[in-house]
Length: 89
Ligand SMILES: [Zn+2]
Image (cartoon, rainbow, N blue to C red; front, side):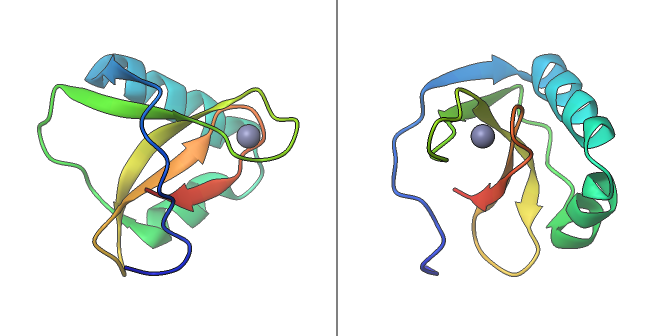
């Protein structure tokens, strides 16, 4: 496990359509984010529900949604819907 894998517990969960919509809206809002996510993740499987975490960035009220599996780690790759920050969970 790498040092940038967060240890926090999930905040809630969402359905696959909710997750896909949140990620689509977020990556379209930040220049280059879609390419970054595409390069750093592998596609998700067929799960119907996904965890959502609170963004740990100071002052950010956003939530972290699963964007894919991290290409280089056994973790899920998450993106904040408010600040665009990426992290592993
Ligand atoms: Zn955030």
